[in-house]
Length: 270
Image (cartoon, rainbow, N blue to C red; front, top):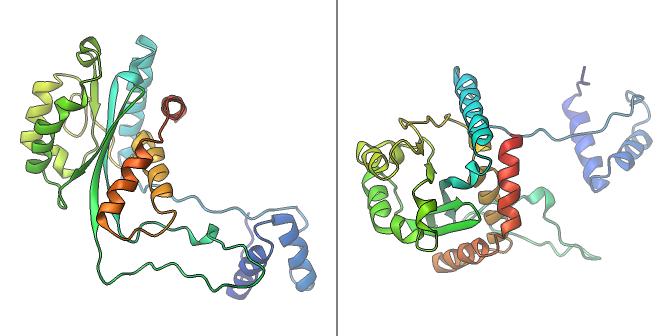
């Protein structure tokens, strides 16, 4: 059973852990030295962070299991099946971005009192669509501020065909497309387009193969690409929307074939 600590003890533990720069053994020694009368840590336990995960609803586990079984069975029939899927997702990039202050440090001999603004008087944001097919990255494409089924269908009709210009025709004919269950993907007009262009070969809400809701851990755009791009885009503050777009394009160009190969392996493991 895990130990329970008072609020004061919790505060001291976090302070000592930070003082030790994340070195758990040094932190344990320092904690015993500073607080010799507190409970002894005699079983060599170490502090570990909680891992945030997607909350599930009743019935989600069964839907996820059915989808995973379908993927694994498809791979048994065709070992290149994952390379035939166009994995897609949209993500919102904002002015403030995502900054992990726990790991953000300035290494100097004296405290420079460094700051990183997180709130701004003038905000801006952009919705970005990215796709992965085999060893190819499609996009980024910048969508309207509010994505709905009408403007998403317009994007599909205007841009989807152009993405496949470098892909041989025989591969296009056997390709699948994956979308999550957001409302913009579930509109009747979008589903009609998918049924016409990917008959029996699309994964999504209401599709021939149902996408399990609340499953960001099963699509590579969520469990790798989004974090990879945002981690590089927000290394330094972004000042304008144009600069944000340029950074996103530059980082997408940094995605290499070995990244995409490892992504497909990770899907199987998951």
